[in-house]
Image (cartoon, rainbow, N blue to C red; front, top):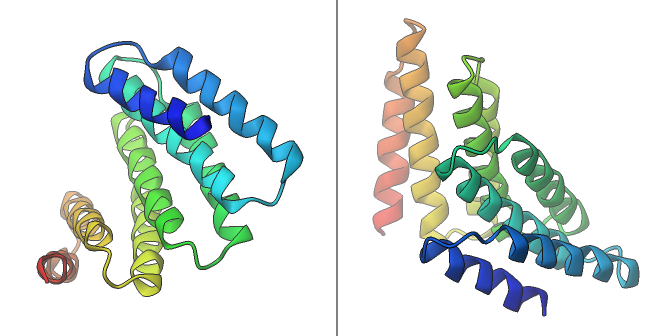
Length: 173
């Protein structure tokens, strides 16, 4: 049932409809399932994915995404704590840290730590599943952002641009 609600939320989002009630139903379903199996990394991963969809919806509609970002990070952290080999959860956690970096940058805060944490998450995902081309693409974007941040600060950004290019090349293979 929870996966179906998650898919419904995606469908509504893609068609410009408000998916928030579906997000809440899906989260409620997954939270109830944690009572039966509190150590399910898949359930925490699914909760994290719902928060990613909330972040995307909120960001596109002028709604503050901060709580969804933080709740998503908490869920993904729990998923990888329960299953340290959960490559997809590390990739999704990297995406959430990238969203946090966007939010921090938008608020005029230092977002370098969030960028670095996203890179670490993507690296872990790739180490666990070297065939995940999306993780390489995500890491290339994160390195690119780190390079731009270094440029803004007047620091040498060339190592990060090189790493971004290497990750992008690996993404194509």
